[in-house]
Length: 346
Image (tube, rainbow, N blue to C red; front, side):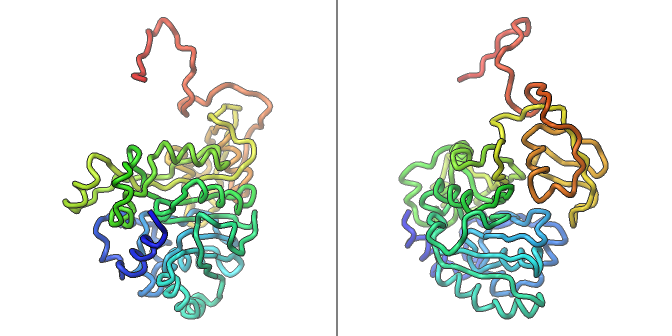
């Protein structure tokens, strides 16, 4: 799909979220109170031009430098601006002039509302981040909300994001994924593409692309099935099914392809804002405050070598290897013959 088609859809066809024909580009209704609080301080016109599918506001953002890929009219930019505070900054990138015009028009309004100004916007393509005035290795966090599926070159987006992140930084983003590769004819349907469906990556291709870009251990944070709720469009995408999912991708040297066990553990101190009782790293790591929590080597690095380090006590090191971390993938290839052969269906 050409950039022009997407620009027209989001700049001219859609004048607000009510114009969407499916529920793909809609965030779940449940969100933390602190997110609701910051959204109350965002201008109404910005809110009505929101087309995201998830929440891209991870913990520990105070003082961070954040980049929003495909920022649209700036809803997430202005929400994140409050979370990073005056000592942090947020940059938004989008290719649609009409959307950016709304974002720019309300910069002064938000600066007065917040009591500080810490946002900027750039027009450009997220597949060509190297052409923008953004320094490599200068961002702590990169977010994106239901936009990577609209990109013409998803691998280029991930490579560019990896280049712009600091060591220990992360890409935290929500997007739409298909249960199989989208057929060419469907991918060329402008309405389905604009509705964030026919540009969706097959989930396994995404994992491959992420690892090729240097994000060696993608972590799924949450997901929900998409029910299109438009009979005509449902018929045009059948038999494919779609999922809205949030992933976090850390830029860390030395991550391993599997979860390896070194006998390590962490204790969460309960000191991250808005998370006094538990820190959720991903869908499988819900770490209660004060409790010794065994972790694999990769998870250790995601906590020890990132902005989260001060919020944990770390037990152990990498001196002794105990094999694959139990219950965390990486099946042992040498099955016990006494247990019988297993037919994987491959």
